[in-house]
Amino acid sequence: MNTAIISKEELLSHWQGHRTLTRKTIEKFPEQELFSFSVGGMRTFADLVKELLSIAGPGLEGIVNNSTNGYNHNLPLNTKEELLAKWDAETPKINELYGQISDERFHEKFNLFGEYEFPIIHNILYFIDNEIHHRAQGYVYLRALNIEPPFFWDR
Amino acid sequence: MNTAIISKEELLSHWQGHRTLTRKTIEKFPEQELFSFSVGGMRTFADLVKELLSIAGPGLEGIVNNSTNGYNHNLPLNTKEELLAKWDAETPKINELYGQISDERFHEKFNLFGEYEFPIIHNILYFIDNEIHHRAQGYVYLRALNIEPPFFWDR
Image (cartoon, rainbow over all chains, first blue to last red):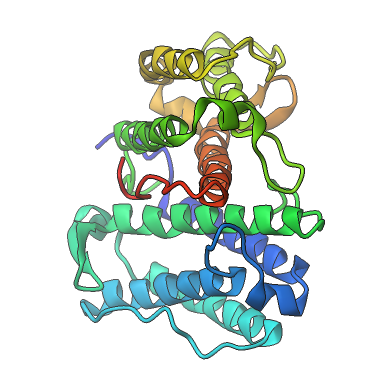
């Protein structure tokens, strides 16, 4: 291993920057369309956000506690306010749990959710990539609803 | 700086994995829809791919050569075959240029394209995030066309 090109703290702040942008994207949706609109038979943006919520915090919890319990995307969040409140509640929890993973563990394999046996760094990159991926789908929904999405660089 | 949680080589292979998936996404589009279809008044997937092509290789070239020339998204690529050939031509070029950036430089600021003055690591993360973002929009276009996109984890 050579010089760190990204430190552990930098990766967290990169992630939290993306989470800020995802929060702004949720906010742009009208309440009704958040839970009902989609394109091409895909899931609604609320369902995509529930997937994100059921992966990030619970995934880190699994890593920190060495638990391989499965995930549950079907969270009981039925309003925009509830989604945003849960989003905000996860923010400090993510910081706290992430901080408990030692630098050395990032290259250890962990069987995330009892299904995804990869080095921890790959699982965490997956959390971030998957969030960018689904948020971008929300951008298309917003455009289809004639609503301007947040600027991609506004984190 | 502590232990490296991602090495320079790992970040490159992470990026090239995403590039492999983007290539598969291009391949899924029918020729005509690649250059004509979009949702909500957005750009076609061909135009989004041209943006990606005009950022990654040229951006690295700028970093390596300390050149702050601007970008040009309007590449003369008019068929799926031309897009894929350009995509493939960039693959080894990206490896080669990326390899020329020393680990120490990743935290130096660089005025990318004469416009984006950030540490080099942030610019490179932006290349990757922006690719995930636009590819995900291609996924929605494919779903709207009733075509199954590639698996997200298939890199």
